[in-house]
Image 1 (cartoon, rainbow, N blue to C red):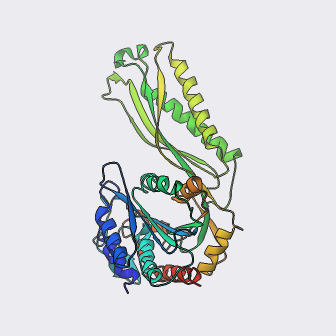
Image 2 (image 1 turned 90 degrees about the vertical axis):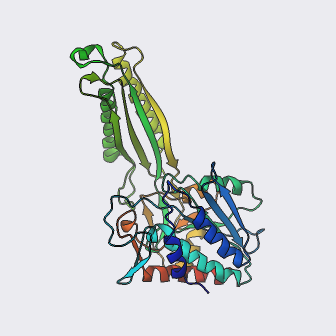
Image 3 (image 1 turned 180 degrees about the vertical axis):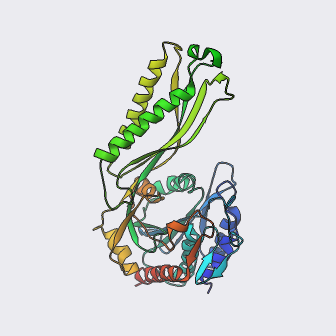
Length: 383
């Protein structure tokens, strides 16, 4: 029987950065499962360069447990790694490599558990859902969920194996991301007043966003279980202008809203769009077509599973723990809840604090805890 470490060594060697294909990794998983007699379904992206994988072990007519993980990783360029990021290396009780924590360690444990499950008669199925392009906005899993929406039986529970140090996480914030483009009027800089400076327009709107953020931080909804207790607004990128002696007619910036599950994020977006219209109106005395355009960049819903739900009790029975947490980063769990009505709990090996960084790693102890959790799952669903 292959160990989780055997699988992790193979998975890390596939450089599945989100910009690149994940098909070689998916082929490895598909071939391994085929050797166990497990049928898999691939759901490809538009150009066929990437794919989700879905596989069910056990009776498909019964609502089962989904183990969900993403196969893509973030880039390594510009990071000072102590070893090859796409070659698993063991040092001091830790396994180093890109994706060890986020989240190929969990996928490796799932494959070990799949081999156990395939040799057991299950009364409740275990399904594997391995997706692409999670790191750029939970993109790939949506195609898989479209397929599951029309399935006659919906999953009973989804366990998303993002790194939580094996603690059961019941909630995370949602995210909306936008690109805003300010459209002004170009002019020679010596005649600046006859133009409309798009950088100034964008700066005015950024100021309005910061004012909304200040209000939310001071008087808005709060949840102290999160590291940042309130909904956050953040501008992360600005582009505008060509040369210094031209009044720029175009400036764009990207911003995001990471919102509490109880927050009406669309109301915040409406406030920002209203502020944009007011700002543009102030410039229309000089240029009647001054305006802002908004483009959706990425989004995923918040996740919020009641701590006293059967789903959480089920996961606690597997981990042996009784605590719960909430996280500020997003996962595919909210999409499972939104699309299928399937409750989700996030629980996986590793620490998010080392994810996306050089020398990302997962400890032997964390992999062992995840193996134990999934062993208990197989036993629980076969007795």
